Length: 515
Image 1 (cartoon, rainbow, N blue to C red):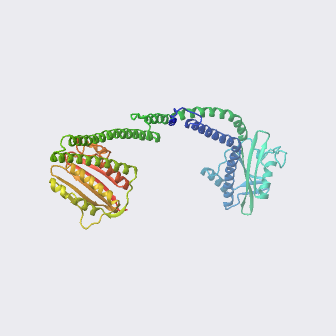
Image 2 (tube, rainbow, N blue to C red; image 1 turned 90 degrees about the vertical axis):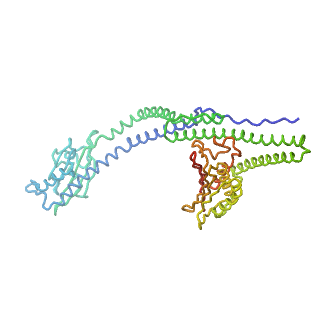
């Protein structure tokens, strides 16, 4: 005895509970790591790069002041100073030029010491705007001399003047004790045959001590900010993933067959758009499920009716009218007609299935769609003459309308649309087949009737499988012709649509392409 093997059960979707590798925790981890990285960069820059950057800024500022004075000296037309019997006099025009530069903002003497000396290494002009001024007094840590003179020609400043005259420039620091540190920048200037040293000095803020203090405070700041980052990332990740959690629950309910589920997310961002798309999908899935149920019910009904008639008339022929040729023939005709009807329904369902699944792919060739419309219209002459209908063919004369498509499928589309128009023909008994050439190789085909029209609420669903508008309820037909038309046009990539006005008629159209 063979044992039947049970089919494996589908894995049940896990509840949306946060775990370590969930989006929420990964988002939190990313935000915390990003915060830590930023804080580490701030730590490094404040403790390692703050002092060099600050010194560089001060150096550029002093160099700009020195260059301004040097340019004024070299542009002077007369000697800027004269020395007689140890006394020095400064040219008033030079003083005016310095004052003009200060007024224009090109020269800034605030918080600086300015020293101008001639080749005798003695001062010509000095300006002290900071206290203390280490440039004009000796320092025990200065590399030149260590004896203080206490005037504008002290050891320290003369050492820097000597450097300027010997090498053309001087850069350095003056340090006094552990609390005072000043930067010195000097350049040599030429005025006629005379040379001058231009030196600026300014105090450096205790930026190194500030870096040490910040280095001591950074661990505490880092800890506090990381705690805030964790809290903020937890709240942000919860706010960010909450809509996704709602979508997950709704998706699970939809998979379980609850097509009425909707997601209420008021945001208008990408997640809000995703929620709107989900709601639209759920609506379409619900409608498709309803159409499927209607399809099964309608097809079952249409199958049951001919099968019942076939069985009833076959039993009648067998039991009652077998010896009456006239009645037997009439009843057998009914059986044949119902069999044809049943065969047509089955063929329509099979054709729609093949077109929708892509089994029947279009075999494209290039042909004249206007000529095909003429050939199809000729086949309706007998039917129109028999029923008193008029098919008006509107085709431009001497104009070719090339199309790259499957001729057999395009013929089926025309038959479906013309048959539908004839089925809904108006009181004037006229329906129209129009061919309209457009730009870029596009041709528009229109099939128009003057019937009752289609209600506005029915237009979006008129191409759906087995959909019937309320005005069509109870009429003969499989209800699959327009669905087959839609599948064929979609397989070709052609645009199509329908416009209708109640009481005036309906126009079905599609546009073909030459390439």
